[in-house]
Image (cartoon, rainbow, N blue to C red; front, side, top):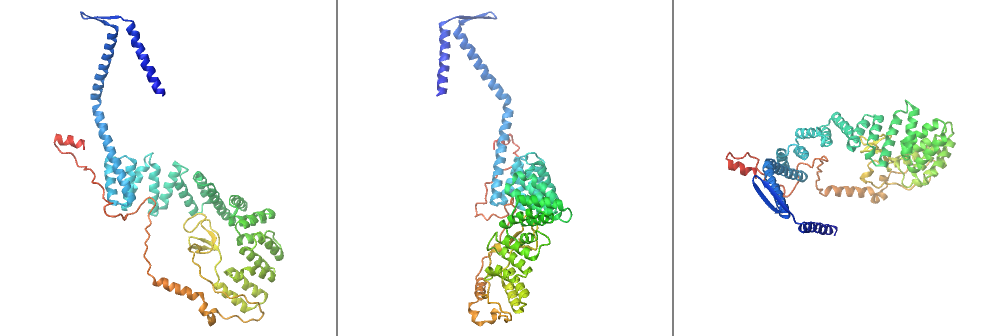
Length: 523
């Protein structure tokens, strides 16, 4: 609406101008080289306007002629760039589809048409990786690393190639360069962090973690920093107790459920005479993650305490989480040390229907210490051999007798307190007998295999039959093919016809004739 109003106002102004000139006629006379031209003012004005239009038209023609070489060159450059863009598009799509032939052909065409294009360099590197030509891929990535716009992409490619040929020194140098260019780059910071962790350089790992803080979730950053502080505290435990205690305290503040940090902090604060503060930290950690190390540190809060005092302390801790297995084991162990066998049996009684290995072993110790009944001891030890396992520090399928900050595969905070191979979900029924009343001179019960009346009901036979049926059933072979994140693989498995691409335009030189050369320019 505003534009319409402005247009009408403009027309009105022009019309008013013409009316004003028409109401005020005048004459214009021009004398030049003996000629005299007389005309009205309106005609003179129209003649001047027409002359200006003619001059502008002639100038446009002349300018077009002068600039025609540049325009023709620009047209051909644009046409060549469009061909290169189409070649890059075809190549990247072929890489995603796993079509090596089209990818290499498109990469060669893109390199010829757009030699300096960043995507052309990326296509060349990706197609070389797909073909297994690591040398060409590394050359392309190195060329990208020399340009400002593709430097980080080139460094990322060089890092991956260094990892593939198992060259950690080069990979670390490349990651350091990438982190210097952009400190918040996640992969570079993670590479430096992994390198420092592998070398047990916890101070350097903390610096690397601080540099990548912006790219991490807040909870993830706090957890990783707590793990690194705990690792540093454990490394300095025998060298500098004060620094070790300070690092452990900071780790507990960041992750109160981190067992090694809480246990180490409790022990060191107890040594420093701060038993009350140590007790609060250990109690909070126990509520979040009950663990034998926390129970042991809590039992020894005050040096010189009697066994009965430690038992009382363990009972207080176990009451924080009633019915928890770790609490029952801690109370039973403290009661065994204090020779309170009834208390030990009462603590373990709720867990005797399906005892774990630690429960059965502890019951054997109680039987040996209280009655010296070798039959009952052998019975409990036999049950311990057949009982379910207990949680241990496990990472990457490896069991450790103590917590480690880095897993065997180099994963920070990889060790977890859990049953070995629990992620497989494979559990078998355990054959147990009902708990019989204790007798001072009772003979050891026969083994399950010696009781024929129980043989038809043994779950082991059912498991054996199921295993035999599984062996007899043919299993389809599955061969997983794992590729690098930036390498889609060699074979795509596409149906016939989908891996064909339109024939690219010929790159042969033009014919020698003038007309043939002219026609070739417009192809």
